[in-house]
Amino acid sequence: MRSLLLLALIFIAPSAAYSQCLKSEPTVVSLTGTVYSKDFPGPPNYQSIRAGDERMRYWILRLNKPICVEGDAFDNTRVAGVRELQLLLMDESFYPRYRRYVRQRARFRVVGSLLHQQTGHHVTKILINVKDLVPLRK
Image 1 (tube, rainbow, N blue to C red):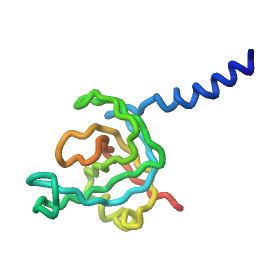
Image 2 (image 1 turned 90 degrees about the vertical axis):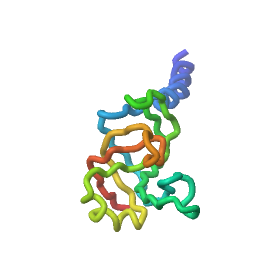
Image 3 (image 1 turned 135 degrees about the vertical axis):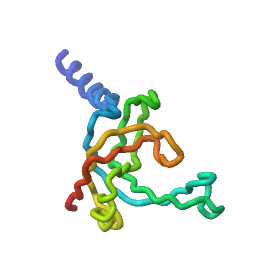
């Protein structure tokens, strides 16, 4: 009987852990992954840089493992399988300080609060409002 219970816990525990989602703003989280820059089409049509849309360059955090994020005040939908998050950098000093690491596709610990996509300038389903960026040694 004990072995059956132990076996059941082994199979149930990982799925229960995965079903727990991270909370959105104002909760602060710490995530680790690779940060890189990517170009996206902007105004006027948000469809094609080649067709004349403005080029918008954003920094993206690529996670090693997908996460789940609970809904927020803007969008109450739970989003599972999130692997990429756009970094929202409110402090312009982040760019010159970390640009060389981003060019190398360095690994970072990113601390901030999560929010759902709200505008055409938001290019991933979930974004992180960055409070701190810490480059990690390889």
